[in-house]
Length: 336
Image (cartoon, rainbow, N blue to C red; front, side, top):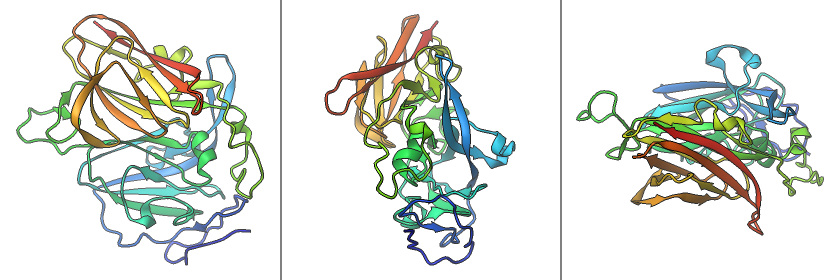
């Protein structure tokens, strides 16, 4: 049984061949479409892989940047970040290069329902759709597929979304701030921590949508990763994830719980000044040597170390009922 809740117009057509139930294939025109300030063009791949530190590989799906070339041969994980400036009107076009159904949900952004990318509320894109939204508030967000969401997000269909504040004309050129009038920083990293159950990564795109019990209520992760890199060993030295900095510099770590289980991140002896959460400045910043976060939570953490040293940052993935540590991912901050 397949339902469609949207009367197609404009860019209609297609016909996603993802089987299953309760999908809503459509490719309508964007309501009230205007000229954007920023444009992103995303395709989908479903035959990527991630090699783990034990030598085994796990199947990965994701989005790729059509404008960067490479076509479906480009299979980045996580998907390429979307980065814009506060106040901009943004278009994110999703083009289906295959007969499948997917969406892009800009998590934490507040667009119209037609542009929120939640398939069962609007539609699942079967050919192409251009999401139109405004970057209203500087902060850390992420985007992900919202078709058969539980599975598609687990398969890796997510990427970072960063909204920078408008430049302050009173700042020296090159100054970077977390939000307008907020603290400045010198270096930046994104720690998107996730867990992977290899069994889930063998399932089909429509698994479970017709009511069959395919085990999507039973997540048994074997791998624990940070920003697409195995946290068993590789993330300790991976460029862009592991950080090397000098005393006196300020690091902004954008921490995202990209998994389903709760997490506890420990900063290895460093003290973070937590200034924002879920894309909003906190009324009062606070200091912490560890944080706990639920699924999809984000924290903006500043570090200004005064002593040299090597600090291992650990992310513990916790069972949502017992609190038992299911696994740990590690990366590193080295201060000179």
